[in-house]
Length: 45
Image 1 (tube, rainbow, N blue to C red):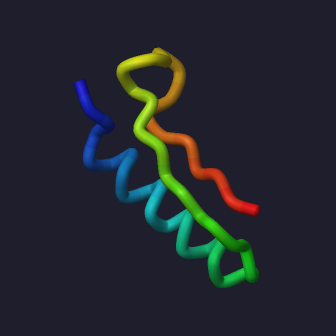
Image 2: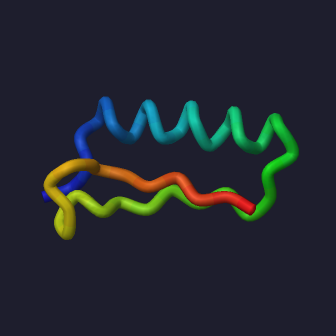
């Protein structure tokens, strides 16, 4: 199973917001197959 369209849309908004706040190396990872509590992780430095 992959992340729901809503989760992908929210993760995209979060990633863009992080990039706008000068985050670097922003990555969205689909973890829906591994975790029940979330579909995506947004990671940035």
